[in-house]
Structure formats: C-alpha cells, structure tokens
Image (cartoon, rainbow, N blue to C red; front, side, top):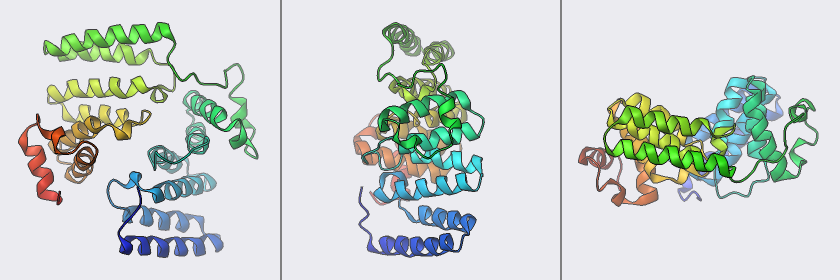
Length: 284
C-alpha cells in the first residue's frame, strides 16, 4: 500500500536523512532509534505500507550489527508481515533465521534457513558467516510447500473432531484436539498454512471461555502464519480480546485491520459494542 499523506511522506524522508547522518557518523544505536521513530510515524496498520519493509529490515540488521539479538528478533518477526506484496527472494526469511539462531533457537532457525535457501537458490548465504550453513548437516535444504499426506490427514481428522466438540460447547476438549493437530506440524510450525487456522481455532475456544488473555496469545501466534496478516477474522478476534483486557490502542489497530480487510460485514454477527468502540475511536 502506498502512503498518500504528504505530511507523513515528508516526515519520513526527513527522518531517513537524519538516520543516514547518524549512520555516517558510525552511531548505529542512535541510527536504529531514529528508524524506530520513523516506524511510529507510519499510519495503522503500519506493516501494510511499502515503506515498512525497508524500515523494519534496516532496524533488524542494525541490531544484528550491534549484537542486540533480542531486539533483532523482535524486528525480524515484524519484518515477516511488512509489505506482503513485495517480491521476496529469501531476504526477510533469512533475517529471521539469523535472529532465531543468534537467540539460541537453532531448530526453528533451520526451517527458516531452508526456506531462504530455496527462495534465493543460496544467494542470501553469500558473504555470511558459514555457521548458518552448518545447521543444514543432516537436514534437507528444501522445505516442502505442502504437508506430507499422512500428517495432513491426521490434522484434518483432529480438526474435525475439534470442530464437533466446539459445536457442543466442549471448549476444553476442543482445545486439546486442535493442540494435538498443531503439534503434528513439522518445525517451524508457523511456516505451514495450517498453523494459522489451528492457532485461531484454539484462540476462538479461549474466547468463548472468556479467557481473553489466553485467546489473544493464540491469535498473535496465528498472525505469524503464511499470509495470516490478510485474514480478517484473526484480526477481529484479536481486537475483541484486546478490548476485553483493556489494551484499547492495540484493540483499535486490529479491529481496524479487520474492517479494512472485510468491511463492516465482518462485525455483523459480533457483539455491537466492538464495532461501536471502533467507530468511537476512528472515522470510518
């Protein structure tokens, strides 16, 4: 999505120029902070704008250079959702793989490295520390695009059983079924499309149990799946959960995303107070 507000465009250009001066002065810490300021200037939903990718990538890369690996991981995860229409040859996935690796999550890093290897034909590894390639010892460097048939069938059976239990309002039993299905997904689980709807299904059960904090956690996990940022229902439920636990600014963000993706129809069967809350905070 392209920015239309000329004041915001001008502000971002100024911040980039200020950041570049800090970079030239070899002050990477302040460079990262200046780019975080630029990030906060982007309108909601920030990840949808073209500028979001370059900002998030530069921040993550700077924290990598600073060896601030927790902050690198935070921004590498954010990067996965930025400008999803952008052509990608493994760069964003490789960044997350490095961040996971440096934070000691070697098994999860392997899956992202494999995806980056496949997408880039190995180009993203050129000039990088060879330790990232070493994780491939004994591991296939190609990630399958579809679940193996045997796993897919088991996931389908467990999910259907979970849906039947949900219809009977046996929410804890349904959670157990959806969780069992989720555990069948090969690592990293978020690489599989099934992870989005399984996490969302678990979150939905917690929502109906009125355990909104637990539900919000599951919907945040759901958003890490492939193309999950474009799923209106996940944003809707997450926004409703955040509203219930009094995180109103974040609630507005996700309810607005749901509205932008699906229109007012997505609120048709929901409690009116959620849509009324959104209309009271933003002009629709």
